[in-house]
Amino acid sequence: RCLSDWSSDVCSSDLGPPAGEAAASDAALPATPIMLSVLLLAAAVVAVVVTVTHRRPALGGARPARSGRRTALWSGLALAQIGLWIWLFRSGVTVPEAYTVTLSAAGLVIGHRARRADPALSSWRAYGVALTPTFAVSLVAAADDPGFVRSLLLGAVALVVTLAGARARLQAPLLTGGITLIVIAAQELAPAIAELLERGPRWLPIALAGAVLLFTGATYERRMRDLRRMRRIIGCMR
Image (tube, rainbow, N blue to C red):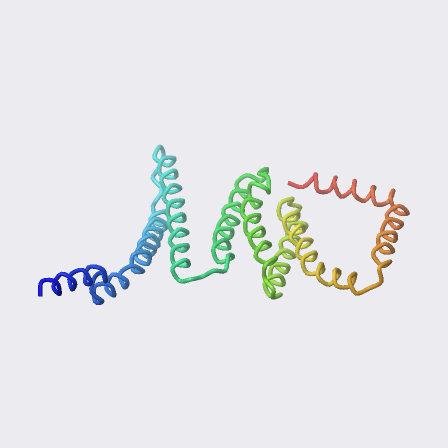
């Protein structure tokens, strides 16, 4: 009897806590990040509301109040972003753009306000910091994505950003959007070109390379003038 009691105690200790306690602990685990994200979002809303509804004091207290409102606004936006990331992660969202688009959108809004306050501000500081991470992450994701929807959407957004940068004469949107378009086009055309070269005759790559070199050599001076003019135009942008 003693041996049976001892063996039952050992088995129960090896098996761990009862099923009811394990289920309760497992149910409590995902609640903590969700509650944390809800609290962060609530704190962000409170901070932004306080920033918006706070009245500006008169005379000497204007500068400290403005600094306090700015601190509350930045704190609220940071808490909102962290809470959103936690909620997305706990929801099983694996699309990388879901984690970067909101941050880039907030950066573009802040950069636009900063350029309105200071027109001499560089577009790289105003917009480049917000555009580069999202484009880079999306390009890496598009390279491993067998579908075409992400590449199509990324190309459309990059085209809009490029046109907006060209119209406003801003370097950062023009160059980031243009480089993204070139990379997307290369990623989409590379498999077709490789298949064409593989199935075609062996002299085809040599003929294509020769034609490109011949065209470049025949129009070299003109291309150099175009490149110098383009460099001057881009150099005049902010």
